[in-house]
Amino acid sequence: MPLPHIHAPRDYSHITEIPYCAVPLSYDEFLEKYLEPNIPVLIGPALTELWRARQEWVTAEGKPDFDRLRSQLCTQPVQVPVADCHFKDFSDQKRSTMDLGDFLDEWQGQSETHQPARTYLKDFHFVRSFPDYGAYETPEIFRDDWMNEFWTRRGDMDDDYRFVYCGGDGTFTPFHADVYRSYSWSANICGVKKWTLFPPGQEHLFQDSLHNTVYDIDSTENAKKFPNFDKAIKFVLFQNPGETLFVPSGWWHQVQNIGDTISINHNWCNGSNLDLLLESITSDLKDVERAIDHLKEMMDEQEWIETCQNMLLLNSGWDWATLWQMCTTIRDRILVQRTCGDSVIPESPTAIASTDPRRAPLFPPPLLSQQPSLDVTLKRLDTVLDYIRSTPSASWFLTHVKGISVDK
Ligand SMILES: O=C(O)CCC(=O)C(=O)O
Ligand SMILES: [Fe+2]
Image (cartoon, rainbow, N blue to C red):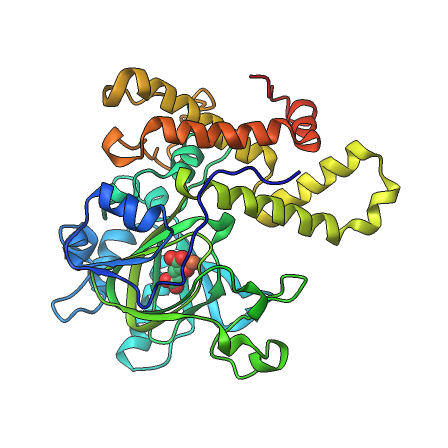
C-alpha cells in the first residue's frame, strides 16, 4: 500500500552551509526554519550556559574535571556502555560495559600522557542512572519529544533516549543515520566535535542494495565499493564547547572528537518527522521480509506476519505495535491537552504505576507553546493510525497477536 501523504516534500538543494544561531531561538522560529524543513542548526553556548554539567564537569582550562566527576558520580559502582573505536563490529563499533570509575581513571591517564584514546563511553542513560542529579534541562525547543515521553511512560519497558557521551581525542562515531530516523540534539559540554553531515536522498552513493553502508567516511577503502561516494553533498562543522547541534531526521553523519569531549544528547521524534518514521519502519520491514524470504513457503500467512514483526523488533527496536502505541499515547495526551490546556499533565492510559526506583524518570509532555498546533498534529497522527488500520498484516498483528483494538 502506498504511504499516505503526511508532510510536504523537503528540499535541501538550497543549503550552502549549516546555519548558526548565536542566541537561543524561539520555538516558533525553530519549528518554521529548522524542524519542519528538516534542516540542521548549530546554536550558540548561551543555551547551555547555566547547566550544572557545564559549570561543574569542566575545569577552568576547559578539560573534563575528572576529580569532580569521580567524587559526584562514582560514590557507588555504575556500569556504563563503552565502544572500542579501533574495532569494527558489523556496522558499529564493538560494544561492552565497564565501571564508570575505571573508565574515568583510564581516560584521565591517557589524557595526561597524551596517548590516543580508543574507549568511547556512549549511549550512557545518564538521567536514568542519576535521576536527581539535574545535569541539564532539555531546551524548550526540543521538548516536543514523543520518543522520550512515550518510552518513559510505558509500563512494559524501562528505557529512554537521553544520553551522555565521553571520549578522548580521536574517539569517533562511525557513519550512520539515527535510529528510526529520529532527530537528535547534541550539546557539547567540553572539547570539540567535528561533524560531517550528509542530507538524505543520496543513499545510493554510499549504500548497496542490501543497505550495507560506508562505515568510516575517511577510509580510503570506500572508493572500491562506492566509486561515487566523493560526489555526495556534505557539510563539515566544528561544534565548540557549549554549542548545541540539531541533527535532522535521516541526515547521515559521522562524528569525530577533537580533544577530551563530553556531550549530552537526546534522540527524539514528533509530528514533523512522523512521515519519515513511517517510511523507516516500512523500509526496515521490507529488509526483514527480504532477508527471511526463504522461510516464507514453510509458514502460513499469520506465522509469517508474526515472525517478520518479531524480527523487526529485534533488528530495529520496534514493530507495528510500538508505532501504534506511541501514536495513540501522544494522541490521548493531545486530546486532554486540547480541553485542559497546560494545567494538566495527563497520565497515559498505557502507563502502569511503577515502584521501581531505577526506572527512567518521566519525560513531561510539551507545553502548548512548545509544539505545533494540536489540530495539525492530530491530523498527522490520524493519518498514520488510519494507514496502520488499513494495512491488513499490521492490523491483524495488532489485534490478534498484541490484543490491541484498532477500532476507531
Ligand atoms: O557524538 C557522537 O559521537 C555521536 C552523536 C550522534 O551520532 C548523534 O547525536 O546523533
Ligand atoms: Fe547520530
